[in-house]
Image (cartoon, rainbow, N blue to C red; front, side):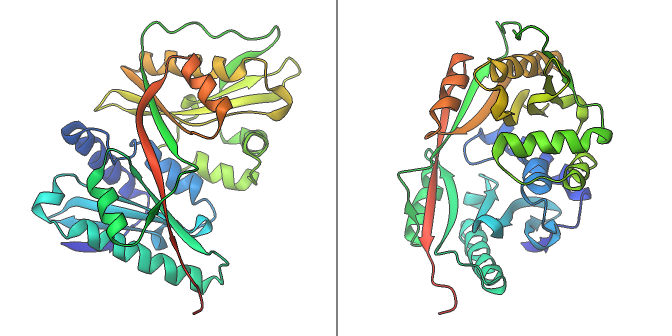
Length: 307
C-alpha cells in the first residue's frame, strides 16, 4: 500500500471513478456522491491548496482509500473502499490515524483555537462507527445530516411568481453576481475571484448550475447539480435562496428544474443531504418527494492544542 499526496486536477477523474465504482459494487453507505468530490475540493477548500490536504492510498495503481482534511473546520473525511476492509483490515485505522495526526499538526501550525476535531460516519456503517468509538471519538446528538433520495419520475413542473424565470449560469463573466448570491444564500464570504476559480475547476459545468432571476434581473436563488452516470444518480449541492426572496416557492422551483434536467441526462434518482436541525430544508425536500436514505452521525474528539 502506498500513500501519496493529491497531485492536482488530474486526480479528480481518478477519485470520481473510484467512488462511482465502489458505490456500484457496495452501495452508497460510507461514500460521497462523485459530484461531491470536486465540490468539496474546489468549493469547500477554496482558500486552501488541496495538494496539502488530500492524500490517496493506492495499491498496484488502484485507489483503495483517500482522505480530505479541512483545517478551517477542524475536520477530516476518510473514504475507504468497502472491499479493502477484508483485504487490508488495518487500512481504515491507518487512514483515520494519519488524518487525525496530520490535522492536529496543521491546527497547531495555524495557532487554531479549536477545542475538538470532527469527522462523521453513516449510521448504517457500523464498522466505521465502532472503529471511531474505539479510537476515542464520541457520537454527537446534534448537527446530524440526512441523505435523502427520490426517483426521477412524476416531477411537477417548476412554478414561479410572475416575472421570475429559471436559467443556467452563462459562464465566468457572471462570477461577481453568482458569488454574491452564494454569499447571501449561506452567509458566507465568496469573492468574484474565488468563484471564478470554481467555475474553471474540473467537474464544474455552468449548464448544471441553475439560477432564478427576479423581474428586475437580480439573482434570487441557485442550485448546483452533479451527475453520477455510472449509478444514474443526480445530486444537489448546494441549494440556496437569497434572504430577500424566501417564502416565494423558489427553492421548490429550483429542485424541480434540476430534477427535470437530471432526468434528461439519463439519471434515475436524485439525492440531497441536509442538516436534521434545519426544519426549513426538511420540509422543502420532503415536500418534493425526497425520503430518508441514510443518517450521517457527527463524531468529535476533544483536543488540547499547545499542551
